[in-house]
Image (cartoon, rainbow, N blue to C red):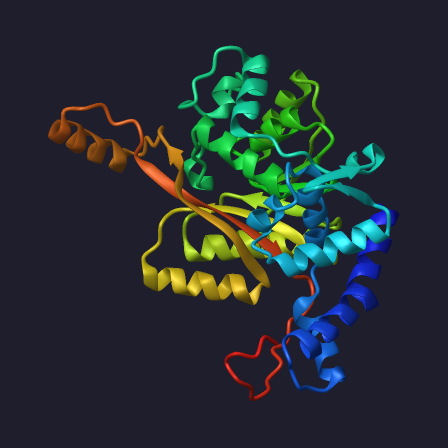
Length: 360
């Protein structure tokens, strides 16, 4: 990993900075002091180490280098700059739009897996697969979800989707945190890629014991710790976290706060599920995410489903709807899935009167 850290420092040091200043002056005809342009680059253009490794991952594993633009929303200038740097450093060779990378470098990167690949691995592990059941049932884990802890299982199809998105964005092997895991996602992630180091924190001691037992039965290693996220903190740092918090503003704030504090100075990734909120409450949450330096990478509306929502009030609603439609009601509650990248340093706005067409 030292090799990649050295690359990162070189790319976002004088190499990238000098190209940025040159482009500002010669390409965009920006008439500003060089000192200001360099300040803009260091504050607003520089990526985190985690983001840099994401760029490398997408380039290394892409079928065509131009896939990188679609995956990262970068423009062709950023692609050229990074490719030019990597070729000069002899990290890659280009043959047309194809990239050749030394195999010893690829071992550091988490390889993406499609939902179909994850489903295949799961079938090989548990046999017959019912994607509408919770993972705990498929793993034959004897666990009863507790309403007091806001526990409620998502469908296996939703779990497969979540793991596929984590593997898509996660760049390299490091510690990954689950803040609460009554959906047993930690077990699925370890089944799919055993090299990822996984830790689960939860307030429910029984859940942690069952997770440990389930992991042992499948020959997996996960670390668990009983934690009250409102009071406790973790000593170690993580590359990313996933949480499916109580679907209230206070619940989302508390769980995400805990997760952000657990991310490292290298940056990180945050994966989050919560249900639809009225637009006025969404505004408060958007402000909260921004205040935590979380930048939205993607949002998938309604992809997470809870087909086993059996609280008394929903049983009554289900029965009313069943009578009205004369059909079996399988999915009662849905939620959105979010992926964020985290900036570990303070981002300052550079206030300067300028034209709306000035790209700094």
